[in-house]
Length: 202
Image (cartoon, rainbow, N blue to C red; front, side):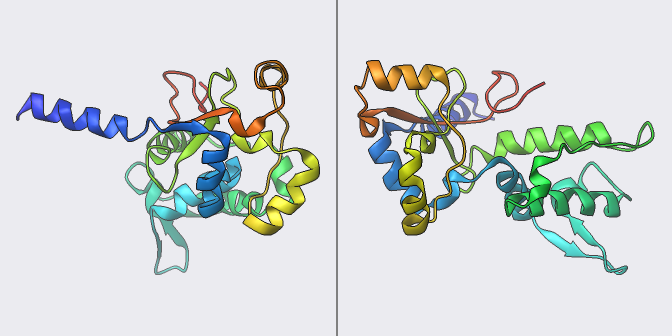
């Protein structure tokens, strides 16, 4: 193994995740790729589905996302995926808390582990790319910069649904540092990481 070459390749991959620009530049990306503005449930659902699905002989669906670690609980996994599917469509179920209940050794912790690791890996792909307002301690979704009055027009014209409000830190920064010019607010691409407390909690 050529370690130096591997390190160079690793650095090149990391540089590919270091996109930075203004909100205006970010919006140009988002208008062409609405998936970058997905809400959390939708992001998780697509992450699972992108890994592939197979139909079993019994008519159940087998999700490849879970297949290397979990066996024999297709029905509970189907219920979990159904929850994310409904929530991704912004139905009322998304307001409910998803609780995993079952016997010891039933795979609950493994399911959570796989979703966390999956999100970390998915956010490093083009399909799962995610962006945040630079210097925001909450890693704020850049689309939250769009004023509420403009959001219906943005959804209609660009297919970008915006939900949520800016954190106090970003609001202060916009009012004082950028004088309300949201198009100049810096945005960067981020990768989810439990280790660095970015997008994934412990």
